[in-house]
Amino acid sequence: MGNDGGSIPTRRELVKEAARDRTTAQVKETQQEQQEYSWTTCPLSHRALTQPVVSDCAGRLYNKDTILEYLLPADDGAAESSKSDQDQVLQGQVKSLRDVVEVKFKVDKDEVDQKMGRADQRREQWICPVTEKALGPGVRVVYLVPCGHAFSEAGLKGIPGDICVQCNEAYSPDNVIPILPTKQEELDRLEARSRVLKEQGLTHSLKKASVSGKKRKKNVNVATAWTLASVTDQSAGETIAAAQSPLPGNGIAPPSGGIKNAATASLTAKVLEEEKEKHKRRKLGGNDNLNSLFSSDNGGRKKNSDFMTRGYSIPAGAKR
Image (cartoon, rainbow, N blue to C red):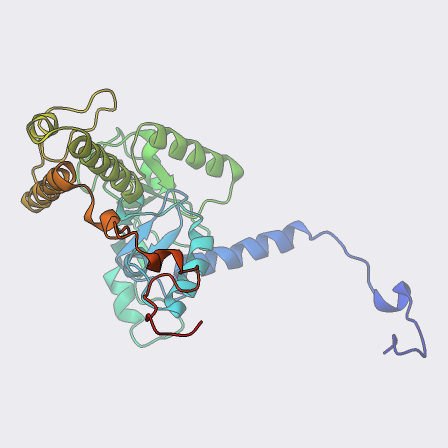
């Protein structure tokens, strides 16, 4: 084999055939195989696509139950490892159910009855409600946002107006999403649409983007810190009055001023009461914890102690 000290192989012996660019037919064949896989298999769970099916802003198809499992918190290490692999597939485009739209395909019931018991083909045959032709690889298919009804691109162009024939809901041309697009122009248009919606505070389903948990937690922490600081620095009466007034400058209302949640309001009131009692004790006698560290006894025992014997007393008759 070489590299054992007896012989050194040359590049001519290792490379028998030079690399060649793929032909157009090979490229099309690879794209066709990828399309067939994407139309029949969920890329997250690697299971067959079955309704309900959802799509993200890039036009990719997923099983809805797989998306729900992905959005739930991971319980063990195996689930976390699987979730990290799914993150690479989703590329951060799905953070909640608002980032996907359920695609509503029309099912050809006659084809379903004929294919019952055949494991090599999908049981549901999806068809265009306008042309009655099959939807799948090799067919340009689109769906509408926000209703989610799917049509062939040719069938949708033959419908006058911008109203869905399935649900009579209006839509705009920008919200016609191609399923599994391959052309770079379509991918660029979908990416530009996502940026515009993000700037407007909307998601792929045209719903308002939810506030992230970190941002809500940050607001709560700032409001709580302001309340505790006001309790420490002010008297009891001034603290209650300040807690019922809006915060100056930052626009965050104090916790006890207008909390609608009863449990949160009760907890805030409890914290205020505890800080009030601590403030009273501090004004009357100082801090008990600090006072316990010091002693007023200046006897000879203190002079005879060193850093090794501090913290306990040495008997008078003990030898040193």
